[in-house]
Amino acid sequence: MRMFAGADHAAHQSPDGGVTRLPELAPGYADLVGSWVKQAAEGRAPRTQDAVQGPRASQASLTVETPPPAWWESAPVQTAALVLFVVAFLAYPITALVRRIRGTSVPSGRAPRVLAFSGLAVSLGGFGYVMYLLMTGGKLAAPGPVLAGRPVLWLLLQALALTAAVATVLTALAWRRASGRSERVRLGVLAAGGAVMIPWAFYWGLLLP
Image (cartoon, rainbow, N blue to C red; front, top):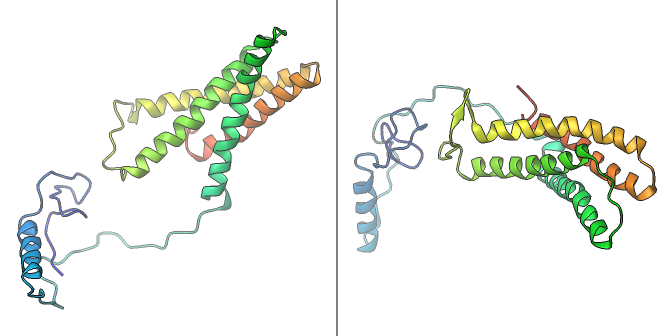
């Protein structure tokens, strides 16, 4: 085992303990790998060494066991939530489009339209942003412009989440006043999606200051 000082997990130089990755490899790492491959290619098995060479590594913080995720944090539940959001928030504009094509009246309501748009943007945008951070390992992500210590994209998602939460309450009130079974079903499905989205947004920090 060979230790390299000032290197991150990928053996690149890092001036701050692995937070920032520089393009240069740690001095001596490329030579070590090259000599190992050369020996293996020439049929000379590289010698196994039990001793640790190079500077001794130190661990600044204690390692703690990661607690198991709660049921609502599991991948199946989060996937089901995403499917629910897409269905609930897309159903309202799709049924409105079908009614317009058929020439039937489409009850106007600003709150349901706002909820359908903002809810879909928050759910898809939130999932996409979190997956982007996970796939890039966090420190390799480029979050874009930062305002008040937060990425502007995240602030936009937070504003949309707050808008969707308010629109959910107004849509629920519109559902109580609605007449006709089909319209109550449309508004009920939409409000149900918004009601589930509110605790989901709290969990992911979209509705937290």
